[in-house]
Length: 545
Image (cartoon, rainbow, N blue to C red):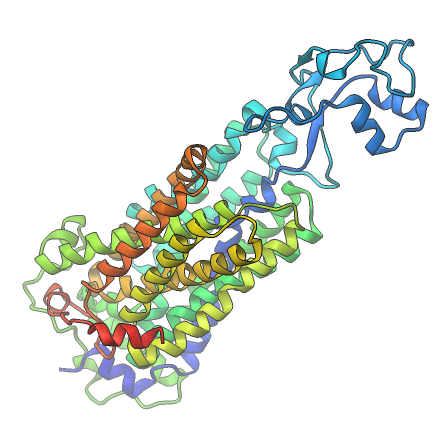
């Protein structure tokens, strides 16, 4: 009986049809970048200070420079560990009174300006930025700064909740239906976010976009990996994630050109209305059609692929079938992820790996902090780090498979975090080098866990399995800011202790998964249960030597 992998070998594993479908679906991956990390530009917090009526007029009358105005009218830094009065407090002074002079105007009111009473910023804030952001428009600073965290958490909560629903839709009604629905809704919500009249509606639109946008990205990922043959499956999956990195690079340039958040949101949302056209250019997955007993449609699509690739279809194409027992249940169910011993073990391990990848990836960035550099260049350089990571993956997985590089990457980031605990803050250059090694390690792990996840589940469960396990990544995105900043209040190195433990444990747990190098995608639960192998320790060491 002819299987999908056998048929793809004959009609073309990565011919003209697959290349066209791949490039089309890569647009989905690139478009997901502004949704995932757009907060960097949409909600950046510029330098700011309290608005004090009368100060601009006094500054103009006295001919002060900006530095002199700040020195005379804005409070200095407060006690260490507290919010800066410069940003959140103002002198309770009537700056319109004529008694104020141009040289040290507060000298006549108190012997020391630190003795003057301070009050809240009741007149708003002045922001030192030529553009605008969610922060500057809705004044999300000082006592309301937590609302910026909530703005980002809403997206991750949406990712988390939407993972289950979108995964079920893709496995129950098809990859194409999921792509069309989620992409169109995401585009509409992106435009609504750009015109949101208040903070509450902004949160609701952002939450809604999170609910559907990840489903679109993952459905595209699953679809392209099911179109190509065994020899190209991993390469295509990695390059699909590289398209996301391309989206990051383009986002930095677009944000530089469009510094106002509403116009930037429109600029990244309007083009996505073209993405639903993928529905008419990319057919349904033949693997999924076979899993749903729609063999006739699957045969027609395979015949179409053969024609596009300039190949002759197999003589026995009409016998195309999955290798399942006809009595096996093929409707996806959440319970199926835990029904059998090996699938249950794989699901729990993959959940932990996704959670760890998210916490370490975002946590390392937060711990390094923003050091006052150029926002656009910093983002651009950090995005470029992901390109060599993809190259390393492509080189290593062909020789060692996925499991060893994944385990090694987690061990590297864990070791890097452990070393950073003992490096003096005076050795700034060494801290940066080790942190970059850790960042490279977690970037490798993040990209590979998605690849491994898709290869361990049978066809009818694959999309649901990826969505459920990767939902822990979104949960990690929700809790990471609280983990990092709350632990740093106790001790600055405490988050690194947590990161080291998470990374080292993840490296060990990865070795409990089966290697899928050279193994056909499992079509049934029985196939997935038979995926067993042990990774030798010497092979793991060779991967990173």
